[in-house]
Length: 208
Length: 207
Image (cartoon, rainbow over the protein chains, first blue to last red):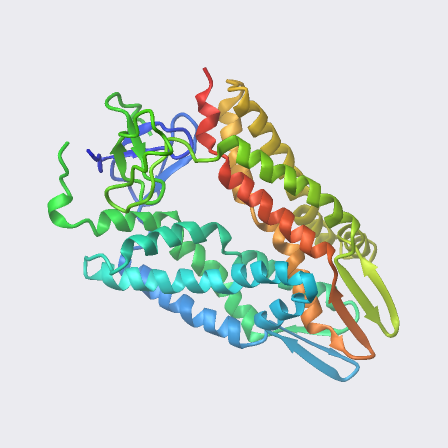
């Protein structure tokens, strides 16, 4: 099968374009449907790996420390993400507790681990063992990662509870805020360019 | 972008790695099992399942949206007094309690976003089925909107989870999730799956 690495097809309307280098900050848009084709390379592999490690640390903090603390008439309570998922899992509600736990814990975890794995090898200019399934998984996971929604949900809960008790954010909440900023930066659509950046040399000039 | 459209052999883009490949699917689209030579993902001219699957998922979401709003999502007991609350009653409580900003955020996430998704996906599916050429650029924009607002409705699920986890003060106060939140979570997931099954390229297939 012939391939055309110099071309790009708009995912939203099938228009075909020739790729060209973009200046920093530029974005290529489809002339027909206005969808984004690709953006200028914002962060290189080294920086992306560094940010992925930062995200891994934030992820640990977000999961180990409480995200919210309340006190009511001298009684204190705090909750972590895991306890929130567990509190939801009552009887048939386990069917919504599992997607919740997946979206705020398991999916971000898998994204960070897979990214670190492919990026560590990409730094050396090669494809990691299992590169193809890892990249397919990253593309599949992206829409199901819900850290931002979770953070907003915790903030709404803080306001909700503050009407009858003293509420304060926990360390986990700050870590989630950091994670919310980092994850879209490191696990965005542009990671598919890793396929091009790690292309083995002989195949670069595939027959035109 | 000024490069313009190119003429040449029929090509097809890999949905995973974006490599542009020659279209060798022939007439046997869907069954032939042609895979991307670079990453091994299955190549399709249009997402399999298409309009029918997207429509079925949307209909299921629309049906479940009724119990999601009618049934209570949370049971609160505070100093001995207890009561169930639904999504709408939660919004009204916030509004009356003076937290109008929060009421607005929850209203957008739990009412405006799902209703927008129902309307927009319904419109996109109906026009794609009729192969309509009407307002194609605007419809493409609407699809991107639905993709973007995708999971923001999960907000209420998070709030119920966090509040039920933390309000555990034995006799003083207790919060438990109720079945409505299960239906609501299902609505969000089904509408996301529906948007993912719909292929935006169908918008441009009109004759």
